[in-house]
Length: 269
Ligand code: ZN
Image: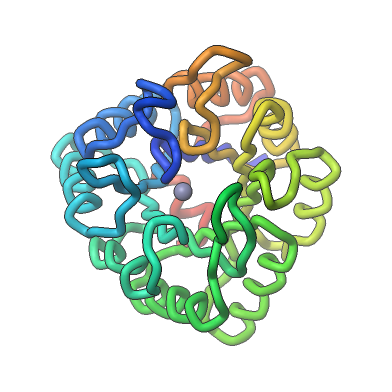
């Protein structure tokens, strides 16, 4: 079986210091957590940015500082910049930080609901974002909140806007989207193109169980405070603790961990 890619999503757009003191929000805090998670086995960092009030921002200066700190520390982790709908409104704003030339960026290929807002990605915006990533040779990670997003990505590939193998992140457990059940996970996996590379982001109490199923099936996993602020019921997580648990599960299942170098090969770059 292919080596396991663990992606760390340390911050996201939602958790605040009031919700958990362990969420990193400044570039210095985010870089520090990513470096520690890289040492614990994470090969990809899914990066968001926050302003001085902890609010989500697409301002490139915050992303640039996080990237600068990672590079200065010699951290080779694969950088994936979020272009998610909660960070900004227009395609131009959401794509601003792609000027930093990360190896990867998230790409939503359809719309859905977040718990209290809309995950708005109209067809024109999706095509614009895909084109920017294609021009910059940035690997899009397709964020799948609903099944249609898989088929939309396949259409974009046929139109020449996405290059295969397609990389998918199956997101289960966001209120307003698909619930985190094994049945939904199997259904999404069976709906993927045969050569797809895929991971899961499981939000909520099923995250350990369903992530373990993904590891067993040959998929990859994303963990981090963006997706779960709790390690177990009532116990707040740290980013490192979430990565370590996945690394231990993989080890006990006999699956090796991918290095950043392996990631580029597995993603077909
Ligand atoms: Zn994200």
